Length: 291
Image 1 (tube, helix red, strand yellow):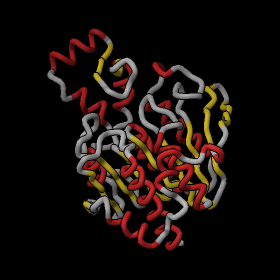
Image 2: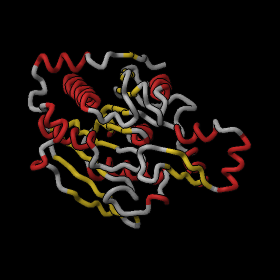
Image 3: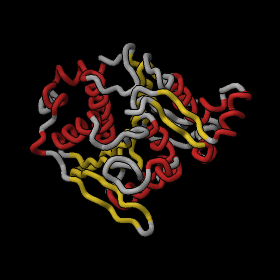
Image 4: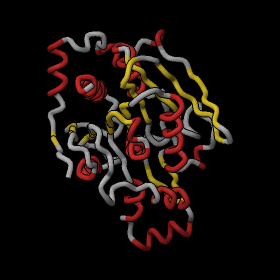
């Protein structure tokens, strides 16, 4: 069983601030970023598949790859703050939109966990160089795990933010049998959410059945790189105990779970973003020292 460390969210932050290690990243830059240095949108063509939109900053290894959440895109606060951070350190960084998301081609309603996993693998195979620190938010945390299993040689470390591994499947399966039968006849499950303009997410039964093929929490997870899992105790969308389950199942001996007492699902408050950035900075330092 992987070792799990419950760390204070202030530990790494105070150490780095006191040593001036991130002087280039002021609070103002984390909040707003420097738009004049923002990377440009590019498009990756794939045979018989929708084009993927992405933004890339070239730099040193290990690179950082950001995987957004369900229905989200590469222009969120966490994604933009990470670009500024990587640029300040001279490390490579890539953020992108899954098929049917943001500026990428494709139809959102036709997407599946398998489709988006292929998107991540394409990015790892074709758009980045060398090992990556994958940073996955919500469902991006699930995709991060799937990609790490499939491309261990391209995975330097993992940072999960409100990791939603298996969550939609286990949530559906926990419903009363009669409720599930009614939903299966209807062909769709509607879930209330604060993160959609419509105020709800719609999951087809086909989406749920396909997602079952990608569940990872039923057995040991063959990932051996460093893993950091950040989760808010006030997350109303994805329970924090899912990050604990991931930590218990990954085979890596280097696993930390960092719980934020007042953290919510998106973890996009200024201090949440600082914690994410400092966690990645610690990993870069660790990986560089190991080399």
